[in-house]
Length: 255
Length: 240
Image 1: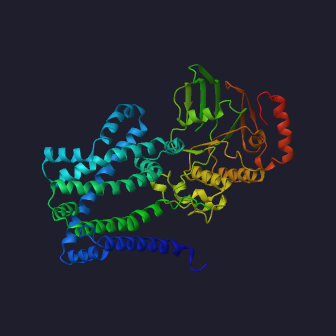
Image 2 (image 1 turned 45 degrees about the vertical axis):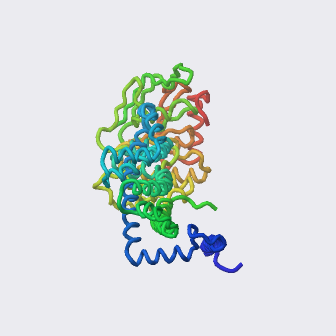
Image 3 (image 1 turned 135 degrees about the vertical axis):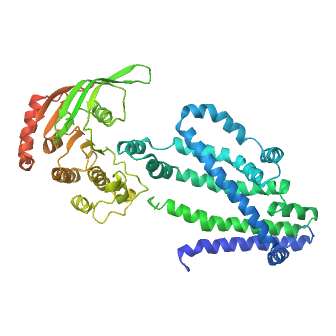
């Protein structure tokens, strides 16, 4: 067999993406409609928009909102989840709240946030975070419930400080749950951020998509979408995956 | 400073709402710098006694006087190492700040851990993980050492080697120590005195002093003491 074994997934990935573009190319030219542009047209738009500085600016605005909402949601959601996971009594009381909030549609939270707090950046980011917090709570609560009490006893017997216990005993046990909710969170958050931008911001990918929707400019809509998807894939490859490899380094590798 | 244990009663609530008394009138003292073993049949409350001494359970009737100063070193039945931290980090985590960077190379050398400082516990055999757990307890330079069947489920040569290593590190700095075991032979090899417990509810049947110096505890000598102790405390309560 030619090629190193670890070069194969990359080859498969490239072939898979190339296949997708071929299907798109053939379908778009076959249909030949202005509202279903072929890939080269979308690419040309992206190049043009990047050269003018529009695309990078709106990407950066959206990315800033994603990061703000993500950090807020993970911090607050983790704290609540850990507390609920460790106290059955608090959990019994607050569980209905969690169920209520997890079922409130994102649109409702966003609209209410804008009405109550005005069309501000804080309202936008806060609304997105509020949408994500219950999901983080549920995942982190599960993690806190499944912690091994043996380690907590060991920490107590050896008189670990609270900070040491948190850093060395609790957080490492929660790491897989943290990674899981970070993964699903970042994907969910960026989609909600677009809605927030569409409804009440004057920049960002969501605002641009709304603008080009009014012109029925599908090449522009797809261009912005693809650009942001590319950014999110880069975040996954350059931030999330290296972090996970580092966090999992102690685990014996499966044969 | 000695360890004085006096438990009048310890009971648990059972799932069907009743109460199960596991310990009744259990009292003994471990003199300063003495190594005592708590021997009794499985399920008689030995581990519960250790947990009471450690303060991991506090609902009981009685008193436990521990050395006031200093720390308690513990070797649990399972090694209870943090799998996400290296061997060296696991051993150093409990150390007080002024000793956090102490030179532990002599301890590592004695326990055969040299060169394994950066391994993760998942890469170690059970025998090696137990050595790390022993190193963690001793690195603290504790004033009280508690061990809960630290050699259980090891093959006999490994257990034997670990017992020798334990004695080597303990002799270097004799610490008031209490070890729980159901293995009388093991207790006879290690202990200054053996506290014999009855079946549940656990109570002290008697204390057997082992005055023979450890260096002279040959297999023959241990066998002779074993015969003697079994005659004194017939196997109703001994699980050998």
